[in-house]
Length: 419
Image 1 (cartoon, rainbow, N blue to C red):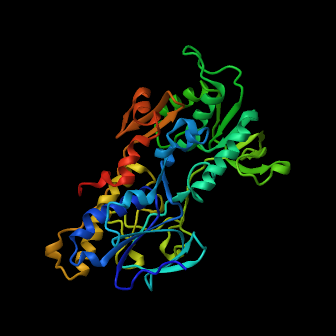
Image 2 (cartoon, helix red, strand yellow):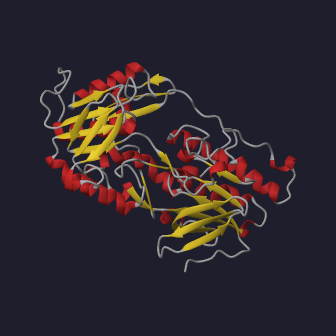
């Protein structure tokens, strides 16, 4: 039977063990709890479906081979980063949130170890459960083991694949196409506009008039030209309406021969089909009245509070409606959320408004900011509205897909100072 938290503790429960959840936990442990009267009466409980944190942006390259990244850096045990805090202030629960009752202020969790259910009363709640990907190749949808098994099956099928179709022209689809194209086909000579006779026909299908819709047309065109140099073809203004696995392999996600039907009626066959058409918010446990029409948690875009859920409930990251999904935006939101949490907790202890100061306000960065790697040597992107040269995109992201940034984040060093 799972451990029951003592009723005397005031639980600050964080749901989600990735960028948003881990960052919130470190920030709260470093800067929020120490500032509270009777700080020893508070405990942070971090609930995650995986015991590992990983650099999810690296998946387009990592899915090809373990040789591209140091696996000890790509996957890091979550609890390791929290050994620095007193044991009575932090608890990790390996499990999945199954229901949220914002009236009784409880969260039910299915504990992974024995599949039992445990109910937690919360004094404050941060929802940072993120989003799942339509393909099992791109994240910890069901934990590290499932992701590695998906990669293993994909790698086994890759050497015999002659046709690959990727649905989705956003960063995940484009980067996956670029990595596979370079790995399987090589790269055209510098004076060639495209790779002639690629070994594997790789096709990206996008419903938009261009790939990378968050970037201006001229940058998208450069990305398409770079894809052509590794043997990738782009089909625009067409949506994948159906994808049916063929024969005995049916049901084996991402490793089946698949018949793909497009919105214009055209059908194509692929030895490997990869859906990369967006994210699915992990909100099945959240009451419908707390969700927007697109299934994200309805969150104040200025304070990051989930106002319909009652006091001291917040949401951040891909699961939240407060801003578009992007890691750099999430990193700007964490200090605001935690400052408002601290303010709310201080008010709850009886402090006057004049003693706790004004609440912090979050403002989403809406500038053109996105970097997309095209294989191991090229890339396109913009930062704060300024177009970046390919070399700069490679230097910042393309070398290791942000792996150089995650060590400080998982360990909490990223949040050493209150900002």
